[in-house]
Image (spheres, rainbow, N blue to C red):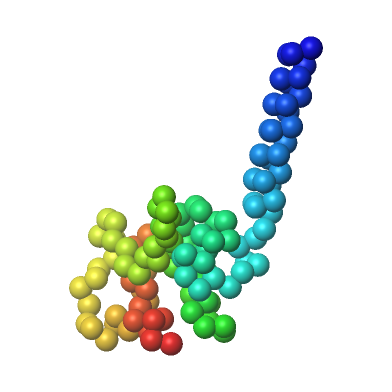
Length: 113
């Protein structure tokens, strides 16, 4: 009797855990217009990676988000392996270059809108 009760309680707990995981994962990132990586985190997306932010309501902007234990960071400059030269004229820093998943600069223009 004790073993059956334990198995039943374990199954209930497992189902509750699965339903929480599946309900979060079924919500798509594209359902939201994130303002920053903290907003991404507040909606349950905790995986480090590239997300689309909306710095205003009309312009999508891809950026890399890093999520720590208690906070999130919007990465505006990412250097990894030197595959992209950052030695360029200042004017080029107005625009973004590279890719948020690898090496990139988010661009000053994105933050001045």
